[in-house]
Image (cartoon, chains in turn red, orange):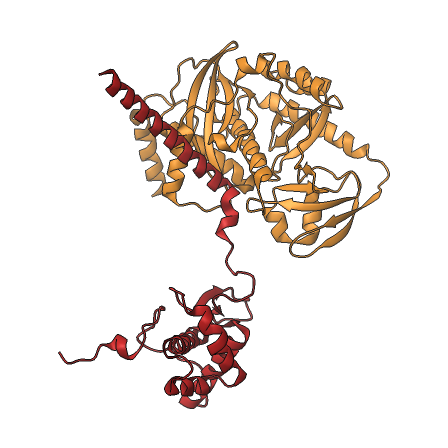
Length: 184
Length: 341
C-alpha cells in the first residue's frame, strides 16, 4: 500500500461536507458560481456574521473553513496558501485579518471555525430557507440563549431539588448500612 | 366505527375497574346552585367596584422591555397590565404571567392599575430570575387543582376544599388539601390519577382568566357559607390583612381565597400530572392531600427528566397542614402583599 495518507495532504475539516455540492442559481454558469461564493466568503471575513439563503451559506461555509484551516496549518509564508487567500478574498486588507487576527483566534479551537444556524423565514415574502452564518468568537451577542442563565427556570429548580432529595436518601441508606455493620 | 368503540368501552369499563370514584363525564356539577349563588355575588361585587371608579382619570404607564420601551396613557382603576400588553405586542399578551410595578410590587395581569407606574412583564423564562413567576405559577396550579377536584367526583361524594399551603417550588409538588365525605379510606388508582391530570389539562386549555377581587369579610363569609373550613379561615384572614379585605380569585365559576398574585390565564399551564393523594389525619378529621407537578407551557423537558420529577412528587409533601396551621407559632402571611424586593 504505497498510497499517501490523505490527512497529510489536506487537513480534515470539523464540519460535515455533503458528497454533492448544492446548486446555486447562477445565470453566468460555473464562473458566476465562483464569483458569488468569493463575494460571500469575503463578506464573512469582513462582517463575521451574515444572513443568507441556506444553500449559499452552506456552500460558503466549506470554503471559509478550508481557508482558515490552511492558514493555520501553513502560515503566511506558504505560497499556495497565500495564492488561495488572494483568490478568495477580494478586499486585500482582509488577508491581513485572516493571518493576524483569525489564525491566532482559531489556533487552539477543537471545534469548527464557523457556525451555521437556521433562521426564520419571513412568510410569505421569502420562500427559501434562511440561515445565519458566522465566525466563532465574533463580538456580537450570542444567537442562541445562554444556558447558564437558565439555572432558575422552574424545571431546573425542580430537577436540582429532586437530585438533592435523591442524594439525601442514598446517604441515609449508606449510614444505616454502616451502622448495621458496626453493630455486628 | 366511533359508536362501536364507545360501546366497547362501556361494555368493559365496568369489569376492568371494580369501583370508579372519579367521574369521567365533564358535565356533572353536584353543587350547581351554590356555585351559581357564589358567582352571582362575585359578579355583583365586581360590577359595584367597577362603577365605584366614577369619573375616569388618566395615568401614565411606562413599559420597559422588549420589543420596545413604550409610554401609555391608561385609565386609572380600570386598565390592567393585560390591557397594556394588548397595546404593545401579542407576544406579551400570550406569554406574560405576572406584572412587576415600579420594580417592587408584583401585580396580577387582571388587576386594575392605581397610579402612574413603570411596568415590566414576567414570564417563565424571565431573566435574570423567574423566581416570582414560578411562585405565582405554583400557587395558580394549586388553585386550578382545587377547581378540578371540586368538579371531578361523582355526586354522592362531596369534596370540601380546605386550603393549600404557601407555594414552594422546591418541595417538588403543588398541593391541595380536601375533605372527601363518604370516602374514609381511598387510595386512588393510576387511572383515577390520570383522569384528574387530564381534567386539569382540559380545564386549563379553556383559557380562563384569573379574576381578582378584594371583598369585605361579610361578603366572603356569604360566598363561602357552605364550606365549613373556609368559613373558619375567613375572619382570620380578614383580621390579618391591612385593609380588612379578603382577596378572592375566580377561574371559570370556581372561587377561591388566596392573597395572590396569580398568573394571568390558565392556558400558561403546560404539562401537568397529579401524582399522588395522601391521607392526612388532622384535628378536623381526615383530609386528603392532592399533589401534582407541572411545567409552564413554553418550558420543554425530556420525558425521562419529567418522570424523575413525577416520582419525586409522589412522596408526601410535608408542607404545613391544619394542625400546624392552628398552632400559635404559625402565622399565615395572608395580609402582606408580595413584593419583589
